[in-house]
Length: 170
Image (tube, rainbow, N blue to C red; front, side, top):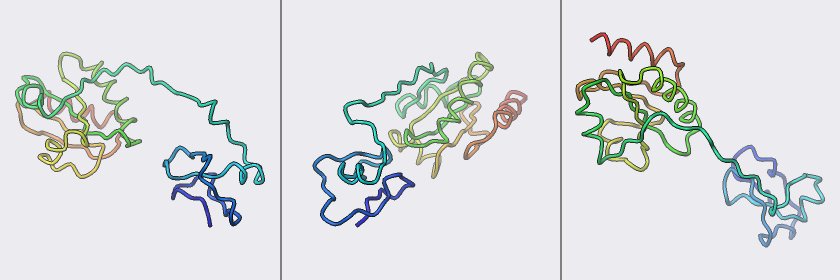
């Protein structure tokens, strides 16, 4: 029997029979159902911090782009008089975090000329389905209530800036 969560986890090792117990599991951090018994860890020489000493990480980044929801979509996006950049994201998506930083930079640089928003695609699935969002991150550019441009995936900042400049020139 092997303990594995399906990811490339350091705990993916064969376990001796009858030593796999779930009384004191350790989690790999990727998925909560991946656990390995402490007796196996002591024999395999894998060093794991004690569950009582957990490291907590807090994000101190102040987002510059506002959150839009399905309720506020019409007022903030479709009825806006200036161009609007919207990022469709999911909390579990790693590339979305990279795009967040780029959108925040753009929000600061183009303050007053472009409004930047983020929409959680899992929570507001109605809006995501309306615009046929199949994967995240997706960044859409709107002007006068119409979708002008759409970028799927993670792109360099210059790519988004070029789309914004084209929208401002119209």
